[in-house]
Length: 279
Ligand SMILES: [Zn+2]
Ligand SMILES: [Zn+2]
Ligand SMILES: [Zn+2]
Image (cartoon, rainbow, N blue to C red; front, side, top):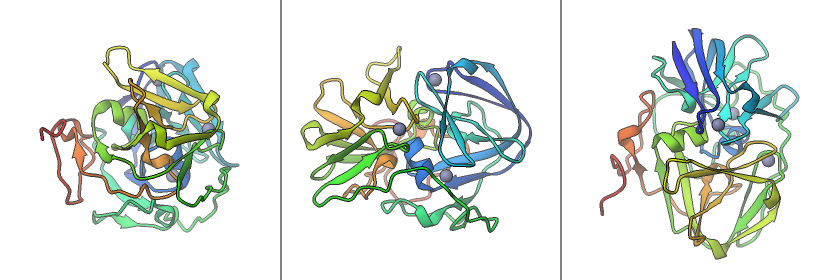
């Protein structure tokens, strides 16, 4: 009924059978693994890989959750549910699955800088009364005069001082695939303001072959998106989902709305551009 693939295209799959409605998950695990401010997941009855199963990396995120990612490009991949079916990160979909988001879950761990502006039902946990969560994740480090961040397994950590120069939501296909999410939220920080505290050697970078600049940096142990330096080394593009605190500025708006996911509507009142802002 719908096909999906990772950013590099090595992993491809087909989903069929019953598709349950999507949920936006705000838990800290999803935010770190995807690098986005929330993840959008849907449950599919059947999943078949047509290509690239040997590219799938696994990361044990909790006693009940093993998350998977593409070892070449870092996209978050489907995971098998402990009950039946597969959880599919909707950002991987190449087709419109026909279902639409129905609720927000884990709103109690929502990012401080994100405000829910749509009318969907909100659940503080799963929504089924289950509050069990045993996430293997380090406590976020808090520092004076710095914003800290890192990956989900804790191997990669960093901090920056001062405010980002800019923050933007991007709906381009590449960002959606890299984050396996509805859209990316990127903060741009001058390189001399960022310090790596651990795990720089764990960072793997994937540069999209047919793109001038686009790439994705991720932790090779857990697949989480991490900051990536610009081509000239002057700035870091920081996935806002990797941050432990609010970044200190607001996103300016939404770019590449022309290629937005068919299943996602922007509900907040902020400027939108079809591609890049012209002025
Ligand atoms: Zn890939
Ligand atoms: Zn989650
Ligand atoms: Zn990691």
